[in-house]
Length: 361
Image (cartoon, rainbow, N blue to C red; front, side):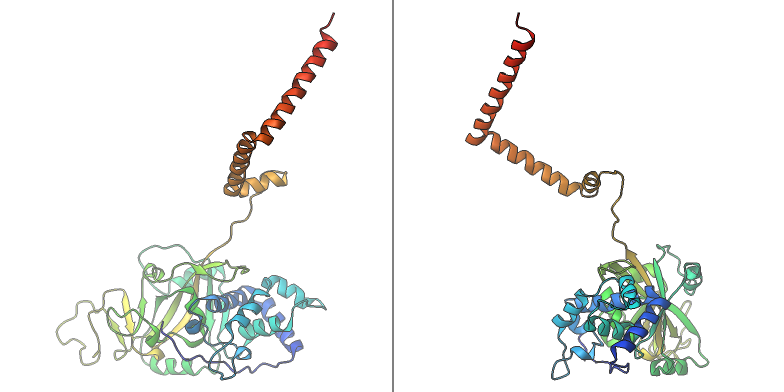
């Protein structure tokens, strides 16, 4: 993705902290996993070394005086003070939240802003129906989480999409990108001028094979306190319009001049690929998350020290090796020789006293 103009979303929500607490608590109670992943995508963009092109839109409270940039260090400082969202919910339910105003304000802006699409958790028993929207052949691992992207009711982008879709077929396919890109993708949709891959011409690249898109979505760092997992890979399940003027795809058994008048810009795009040249005919409908949960310590001993050694074998081995080296070094030193001499003198004295007491006539 290339650099783009940073856009602060005007905050339409009340600045009243009490209203923010109420709205945030309701959102967390309704779907905490969706709130968690929305916040995690924001954090991934903010923590990225490419934050200048990834953190878009940025929170207006952190804008600099010229309004075209933001204070990234201040944003990251606030992020570092945000506890796990389950804890946030418990604190919000108590009379004294224990959360500072900056934390509540930023989490509320990301999770509750009416300018952004809403995420909805898809139940496990709905995974198959969601994935069957695309007939992919190569088997892949099942996502750990799926979230539906629900546009705002007055979304202009959604209105344009539906206009293009009139009397035309709508299809589904996958799009892969790095996890720190998805905060902007969810909020602004896929933008062809930000797509670097151009093997078959400029445009937004989709595939009907999930494993193809997964190859463009490596595991990346999300939010360390996420209940969904702190390491994530994400791909988008997109709906697009089969528009002959704005879609390039492989046409099987094409005859000379077959459909050329209608599909003017078609090129020899490989099978299972789609290249879209108009942002308005594609919409992100679902996020498929492949999360790596942190390893939980295994309790196999009642003794706390033994459990620690079992779960930290490499560290325990290094400590044990260091103790051996120190012991050998101490044994060969003058101090070590002195204590060794004292030790053997004590042993000899003990043996002599035993002999005198039990074996003397």
